[in-house]
Image (cartoon, rainbow, N blue to C red; front, side, top):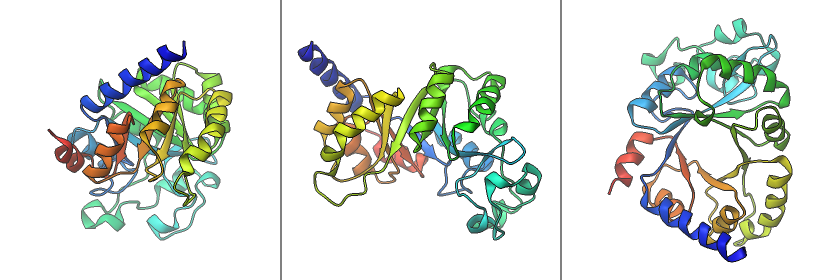
Length: 266
């Protein structure tokens, strides 16, 4: 059995290296348009992204909005705590002004609007920035969108969110986000045994990590032979992206989907 698992992992790794790279647009095409906005997501689709990734909070009045930070100060100049604000208050703010005059007046989108941009055959990576309390509303919104289960991927740093989503709707792919912070050369190898235990406990489908230099082909192979996916973020240069794809990462999240697609072309 151990030999069969090892052989299956080798097959997966070899197919990953030869297949066209699967690129996830980080907060949309966020180098060229305001992050987490409809213009950024629509631009990502025009640049042949395979998926978009956005950050989502549950508002005070029960709506799901697309925004990264806990509060709105950095992006809008006015400080509102997203989870403690109403949708009306949040959508009164301009979230496009920092990207230039052409984006002035851009409003914070709700999940329903973002889901509506997803074309057939493409995916959305929904990063949950709050807690498991968002789950019932999330399920209802995605169901209403009529996206297929295989078009939806849930990601979160909070393992409780992943566990709640998998319990409520196991048909969705849900990947735990983890950032290797240690400066040790073998940081990934050191953390891996504990990570594997946690992935099994919360019933995650995979691990999505930063592009830490300690990650090796062996580490990713260990994950995949244990039945877990590996995804990497946030990479804008072709050299690093190619290295992780060759090591077995299944997707690359990038701020520049169009440029990276061209740079990775054979």
